[in-house]
Image (cartoon, rainbow, N blue to C red):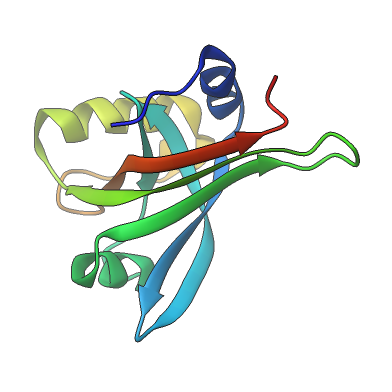
Length: 132
């Protein structure tokens, strides 16, 4: 597992949207997702019926970009890794509480175990820029 620097962690904790890439029939599928930084991993919320979830079930390899664009001050972290699907149990509960605290949309439309999973991305490769 890769470790992030303190500045990278601060950057990751300051934002809430990323773009995740999965693959379907040798075609990339990219979409925005809400995420949290959790135990040196990125965790995204999804639904069972999404293309991303279906892709991950067939191929757990993924890419993720978290960035902030300001002209002349672009900051980004790109991560590649494997996904563990979290659907229930203590880890699900811990992650869910963090999502509930961070996102108003979770507070307004809560869910329980086995109603919607989390995708826990375990980084294998990471690169970042603009984060000094």
